[in-house]
Length: 206
Image (cartoon, rainbow, N blue to C red; front, side, top):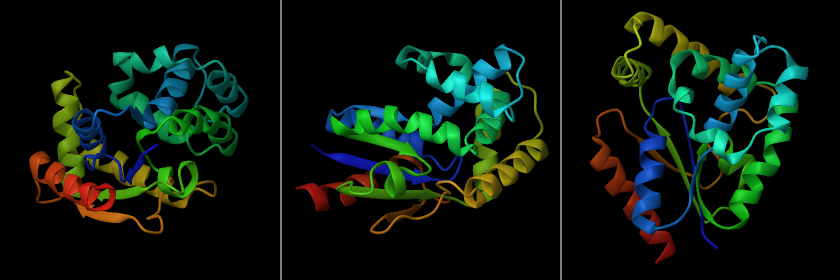
């Protein structure tokens, strides 16, 4: 059983990398951020605030794998609310089993606390990062591709706020896990990142 843990900052490219690596190595892939987005989406649909811990827990408890296929989870508003939902320790605890059950079978997981909490014994740990302005520019282009009208300034502001929440929450904050290989994608293409990650993984597993 091989587990590859990919952690990193928002819009650093870890999701794109995770999907490519999963196809290359022919192993399952889980974007754990989608779990929190699905919970946030449920709260938005039921007109509940992401700060409502009780309702957030209820949404987490009824989460099903098929809920992660909802294309609406890509939206900017869902992402912002997902970050708020992820700050609740009770919600993180509820979603912990879903992630650990996935990891038991082996595969690639990406998120914020994979190498530190979900899979601390993963054979391979990667930490993906990039400068905030670069990440905001990527996210702005992505949202525009979804036909969302939002300014770069707003995206940048939301990204900084999200970084602060992710890094400073009391429960499972975003940090570089022991033994993680850091990849700064600021001046790299997706192909460059894929090759570097593949070289790291092959050096460990082969």
